[in-house]
Length: 109
Image 1 (cartoon, rainbow, N blue to C red):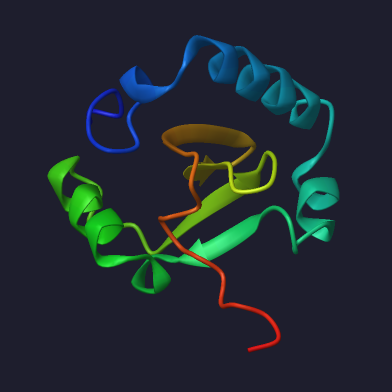
Image 2: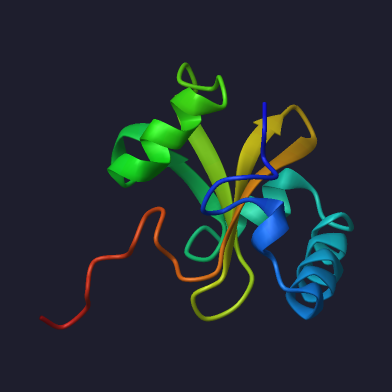
């Protein structure tokens, strides 16, 4: 698996954004999955078939085409971190600074 490369890979994260992301993810370490998932408007599982086509394609490229759901954390406005849950572990796959992997439908349109 190669999470470093590609459009949403680790190598594309600006240094300042990396430290901000790690700080926010550290906060989630103090919570249970139940606590995290109660705030399901911000942080939640998403079925893979709902992801944009490039994201589904990238899952295949990194050997994860059999995944049915991914979990995403909303870190700020458009910034998301995507990954897989394994029991109580979160495996980070992508950094999505522009909310492109699974855009929300526009409101009030």
